Image 1 (cartoon, rainbow, N blue to C red):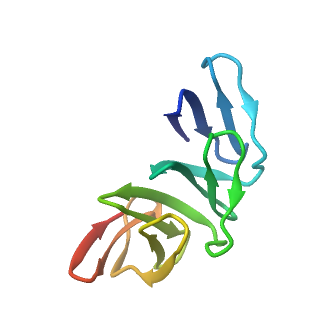
Image 2 (tube, rainbow, N blue to C red):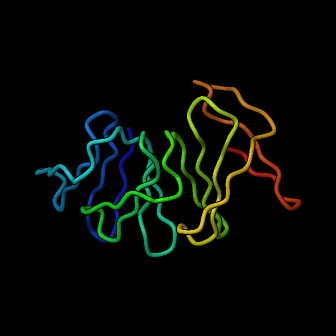
Length: 130
């Protein structure tokens, strides 16, 4: 579903197969995540993954920790301009954070599009398109 290179390691969000990583792009190893993994993004010094059981954090792309606040089915996670935004599957809810650790839940102003996984949100005069 999604592949990134992070600190010299290839990291893949492989849907229902979890998160896998490789240092050479040929030999792959399954991480400690078995949940469905949807999308990866780098925010600060961490790699974040949108998973069916919430947001996962990693500092090396190999070992992952489940966030204790965002534990719903997350489909999209994006980082830009110092903010990370994660959208929940099948709802109008999204989560946002400036540090990737402290999260605030809010609601999308609209919902729809390809597979129902995008929308836009307004917060403090900013427009976010997901």
